[in-house]
Length: 162
Image (cartoon, rainbow, N blue to C red):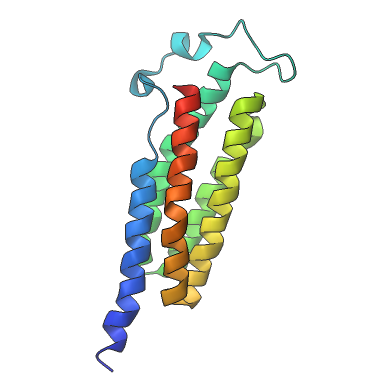
């Protein structure tokens, strides 16, 4: 009976560490992202893409703001996981809804493709976290395997927008 508790805590620890790793990978976009101003946001505004009408700078501003929120909310989900795994799932769903709303505002093709992939991987993270609640050992392993993918998605957005 004593072994059941540490065995159950190990997947929670793996999942929590995975969520921390994802949250740590979510940073502002671009070299001066912390000091984004209206002038920076409109820089390049005169060169919209032919098909979307949205500039790369405008798309990246939307995504940068959204990724900052994503980072904060992933940390919140992590904080909830050890005491209330279902609350963590709910927090992740909220993160996803907010990120989806931002992705819907992005029409610049390059940024939109990267954001759509990140959103799809976030949906997979939510599904895997739900699975981890029901099946701690196998579910936590799936979450841990997905973390590098999400970090790569965020890095690609940062590189594109940087």
